[in-house]
Image (cartoon, rainbow, N blue to C red; front, side, top):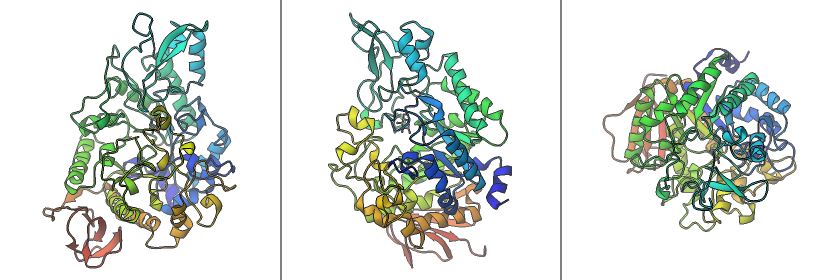
Length: 558
Ligand code: NOJ
């Protein structure tokens, strides 16, 4: 039994310190050659993640789906879409991941289904007042002829959150709610058959030995009684708001969601080993977010407040302190994340000099984009600081290669429903979803066995290919690998973070166990203290300039 496999057997609290690598299946690796990544592509390349040194992988959806929202529109929660392979391919992937000491977390999407799901098809056929319609949020319209939607809610992807159906005889009928695309009808989570259906989905995948679930839109399942009007404030982001004072929409963060998570926790606890639930919940402030990870609810929640913090020393210090305190108050570890498939990659985002609400994206017509090398330098400093923080961290595929947001995507290649629902006024999220470059000299940079890619890869990515970086000790890939090895070696994830009493303006300095972390965010250059430099986001000699992080080993430890 190798070292990792031993940990898999015994470490029941693995998730408290885990580094979890997000795989976006359609863009990781394509074994079938159709230009879209798949499960066999993942299995074939798990060795690269074992070498990188992560503890677990999380897969975005690979379920049966018409792919109107890249698989977050699920038509069958208990099967694999042929695009990605088969259930047998899934089982092989899990077996291989476990053999390599990697846990496997999968996405579950409970807020809505695809309109192609059997439940929605039954609801359409059964008509108003039926039990089948009760699984969803069907309502009559308002106004004399019912032609006005039931309320004024807006879809997260733009446009109204309601769509009207025609009755079977062709006359206009009821409206249904969809917080996302019109092909993603919202379920009614007060309906017992919905609750039971999802218990069954959880057990289906737990029986296939998954280690947990990342729960999509975990703040959205329950809507306020009476569905009161509410208009999104565009400046605070439609997934939930970035401002502590901004009112929460009546479809986010309702008390009733917690009963659902308690029920799910009981299902997970029926199983051996430590299986986890991780909440995708855009909830502020952190004291409220922490409710998702109370002892009888979920295990982890994504720390989007951290992700959304600008590159300013004082703000970062505050969010780090608050995160550790608020999650500790309910006995949970904090998590940390800088990138995922819904946000502009942090190798670009942290250097944008303007507001860009989550989901809006950037593209060819966006003015004043940052200079890539300087933006990458900052991203590396941000990552090296994040990986030192106690708790669990998430890495999004490609950030270990320093991939920036892809900007020059032709309009006709875009797939994000946001782009279509806003008539092209928001670029959406395609720029962070472009297939990975594996080999500099191969077609599609080795992403696909047939040299294809579902969306074009930028020419500059040749220089960022994994094979080129693997042999270069100064590469971003080597930086991640080194940081993950040191993190494990010095057990920083279980250490208590202590801030240094005095640091110059613009610099953050703290210790985690035997490691002192110095991050010059936006300050003047400072002298580099004595001690062995264990990791450095860019090479340093005597001074530490802005946009640079180092880890220094305390005297006498070696
Ligand atoms: C959050 C997912 O991360 C995002 O990609 C998706 O579009 C929405 N939820 C809707 O499922």
